[in-house]
Amino acid sequence: MDRFLARVAKLIADVRALPGMPGVDRIYLPGEPEWLTKERRMRTGIPLPRTLFEELRGLAKTYRVDQALEPVTTPSLP
Image 1 (cartoon, one colour):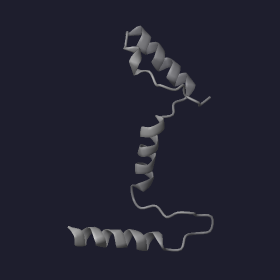
Image 2 (cartoon, one colour):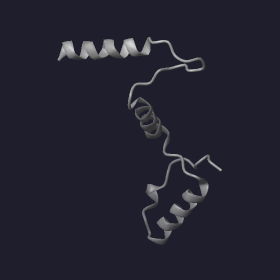
Image 3 (cartoon, one colour):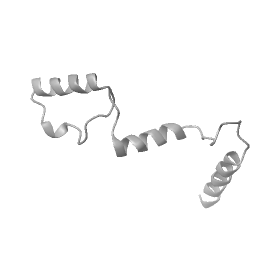
Image 4 (cartoon, one colour):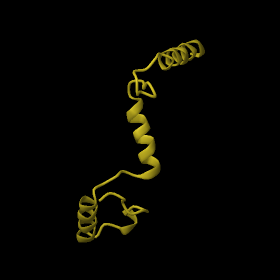
């Protein structure tokens, strides 16, 4: 397992060391953008348009969903 992990780490380092296209500041591995998005959304929440957020809030009130399920912060999208 140690040998495998070392080889994978070297492969990742080799891929990241490749020269990028002009204007490209980072080379991503397959699945990495999605993983980074998941991590960011776990920290900050999932952005929703205000209209959808208000509609969901209205449905929660209509169906008496526990208000503790509301987000801690108000969405910042228009």
